[in-house]
Length: 98
Image (cartoon, rainbow, N blue to C red; front, side, top):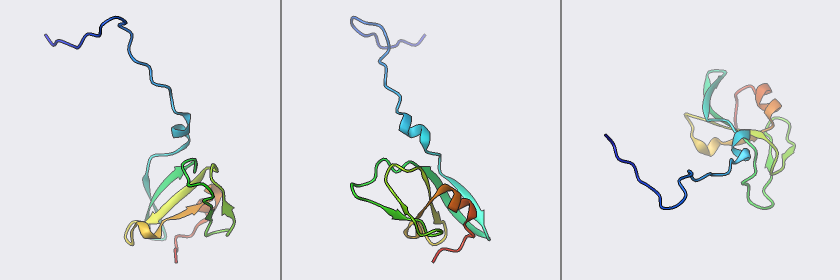
């Protein structure tokens, strides 16, 4: 028989508030585009530095902090190729990063 820790006083388990911003992101996964493997993840940009803005390499329009978007990089060339895409632009992206 296994003995568990007992708490003094209240026997209710500690409740942690659910962080809904984590639900707006996806788990990292790999996608193949034109024979190139990319590490891909959805993010909401909520943890961006103040004043941080990304430029989508497909449409060349800014992605402001707090806007849900896709982050991807070429697995073979490394994280230095990381780019931020509008979600629809990522779907249109042909797989060639400069």
